[in-house]
Image 1 (cartoon, rainbow, N blue to C red):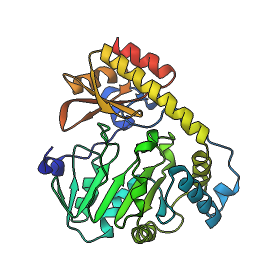
Image 2 (image 1 turned 90 degrees about the vertical axis):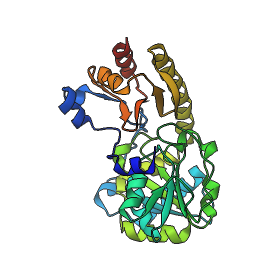
Image 3 (image 1 turned 45 degrees about the vertical axis):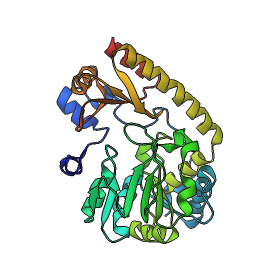
Image 4 (image 1 turned 180 degrees about the vertical axis):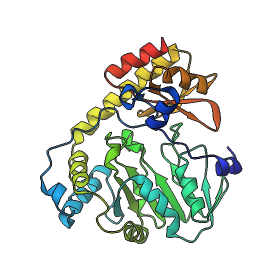
Length: 316
């Protein structure tokens, strides 16, 4: 995909059930949304103390989450951490941290990075630049990248919790580095809106100022602290996701699609006509993801429970 194509392409994301109902009919409850890479079996929300709802989040609650995050992701002691209401909130602010120049973003990849940099006056390029963004593993094809070697670099690891061995977290000690983590995807609680930036203390301090006080709700702090402390759930979830991703590949292969990448939270397939596949599934009230830059690529998240029966029936 060329830089010009990236510039003029409209924003596209997974989700959008309201738009799907307007196009294909039904109500929200009729639909099975497989257009995102969100874990379909979310972390069980623990009982929350009333103070999580009634009081402004205090230092102790945020400190507890930071401690859990540092342990879970093996964050180096010298790296700083910012907690925000979703990784998207961080992506939108990061380009304002340094004076605009050229940023290398090799596509196709998650489109919000390029949009955010352009909004702050940056030139987005496929070639060498003073800054670079990688999505690792990449969305939508799951490819892994070496760590960038530029003065300013952003490593988006929103989907890396399924394969933590590939994390570049050790790079968080290098000046000019920011590593992003998303809570909603692996833990399946996207509505909680929680994200993390890890890295250069000077950059993290500026991000924290931009976000402002009390950026994350008390319930989000409590739920995420419990989730990041639950190693057994994380290990069991990785095992299940691996098995379910293989099951999805087998099902789609039998139906005539070819697996070409992805992670264990979403799979990418080559098809003769991705729009026709999307339409076929939508008529069964199953939402799949297609891309403006490829007429052949179809991305599916994982179903769960009865969702498997629905998908198998739609593909029969």
